[in-house]
Amino acid sequence: MSARLFLSSGDVIADRRFDFARDLQLRGDLFAAAELMEQAVELAPNFASAWFALGELRQELNQHDAAISAYRRACATDPDDRHGARLRLIRLGAEPLAEMSPGYVKALFDQYAPKFETALRGDLSYRGPEILQRAVIAARHAAQEPATFRHALDLGCGTGLAAGVFAAMVERIDGFDLSPRMLTQARATGRYTRLVEADMVAALRGEPDGSADLVLAADAMVYLGDLAPLCREVARVLASGGLFAFTVEAHDGEGVSLGATLRYAHSESYQRAVIAAAGLTLRDVSQASIRTDGGVPVPGYVAVAEKP
View 1 (tube, rainbow, N blue to C red):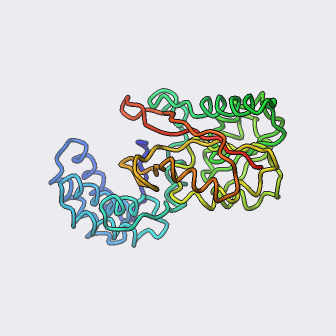
View 2 (cartoon, rainbow, N blue to C red):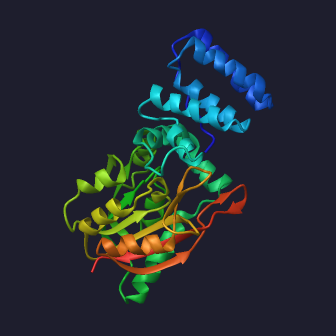
View 3 (cartoon, rainbow, N blue to C red):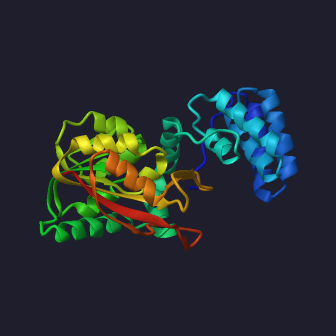
């Protein structure tokens, strides 16, 4: 995602130093950019955007310790971590694997909302909802049951792409997302009965037991490291015989990792373990790429689990 968050320092001169530094960075003059960015934080010591940008510059210059120091200052000056500095610290080995801050996810998608669908469909060849749809139809066909549903929940619904694909299969679909700007676009589609601004786990906790017969998560669980709380809530909310269909990015090792694109990847064994621990039955898990990165397919999985 190329959308970039900027939080003004409140100091006009410091903001200008930031702008000049960013221009130099884009031109490839990293040393001069870092010098100007240091001037910006000297003028405004609580300038979170400048500390984060300085961390990026130090990282590009292979100044490991200086990058870590700048990212730590970015975290300290913005407790909501809207730039995602802690994720950079994790990638640099300076922090243990942890969850993304809700502030970061919300800011990321609020920034990205105006061009979300164009970028996903055009630049990234995104086809998550279509892959989920095929997986759900296949699971119902294997069970010799119709692929129609009374009540579906769309986790991390974004602008409503999944609702469009599943419209003919569901009587009612509700969407959950952290980003109000994404929800504004989802609301404009008229496809949702209800839209809730909340993270996925918190939103599910507000749903009654056994109230849904389909839960979808298309390219949403890449923003969660620990999938166990989500899977437990999905199991509670699903009615008997209901399906949970989701995609994740693939991790070749064991457990969970945070990739260079700052999205979590989950191993197949990890998926199987959390699904079983939640009391769900995994009907199918198969390799699938739902998007590209730089024109190269991103390895992933599509899975369908059932509530017994």
